[in-house]
Length: 126
Image (cartoon, rainbow, N blue to C red; front, side):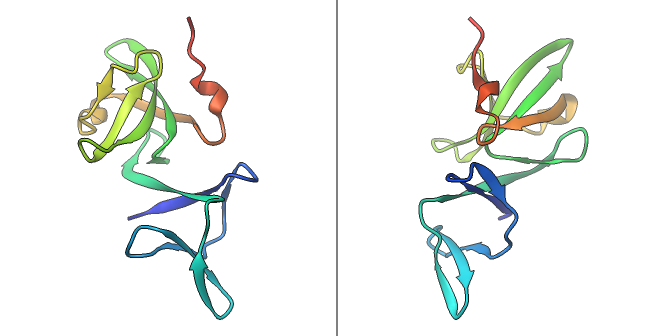
């Protein structure tokens, strides 16, 4: 499964290619002479396998600008543990969940940020 790594201390994605996943799902890091568990500082962020309208790969935690049938909204991509799949959740109405990513081919979707690097985009208008 394709993933990238977020550093919680530096608050940025890591360009280092020495990260991998152990069979138990823990994040590992290659070091001189072997490997180690990467620790809680780093978070693996998994790819959905889909791309937005500009060809950029969509990852868990991405914030998406979505246009569909003349309507616009902002959604976040999350992993649904009850129905193991990625979902898009409308940030203004968390009850509005899109499970059918195939339908996303009919939507105009663009990544506008990530909850990790742009948390201000998740502030809800009242």
